[in-house]
Image (cartoon, rainbow, N blue to C red; front, side, top):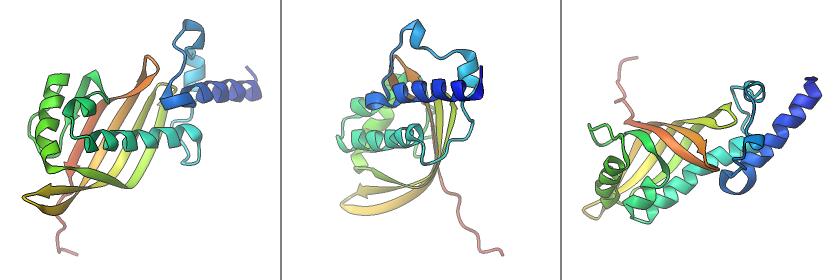
Length: 178
């Protein structure tokens, strides 16, 4: 396949992925071939539409937190997702575990803000968003901020981008040794 034809094919598939909330046709004809997937750059540029769309998935997840409903947050995760949360030692590997975690976490009225994000498009159906976010939590009427590192791995399933892996860990303590 000539380079210009390959770029046009990728652009067309990328446009299909961006339509709506990441929806795309799931018919066999609409699925990318292995060659088309291999042609996608491993590192996305911030100004690419698909990269911006992946970045908006955090905003949608954060809006689900604001509802206070742990089931709405869990809806953002695939049924077989893995959650390694910041404020729990328990690895969550199914919907019930994810709902349980957010049932407790949402009591703190969390609202997140991304400080730094790097998005990598692995292929046309898999993306990783890694960075640093800050959560404002309210406990006993007092607000506090918690800074953490995060990784969201997204996969396009049945026309919807879902979290398949979410790892969040508090930032290590700063040391005074220079």
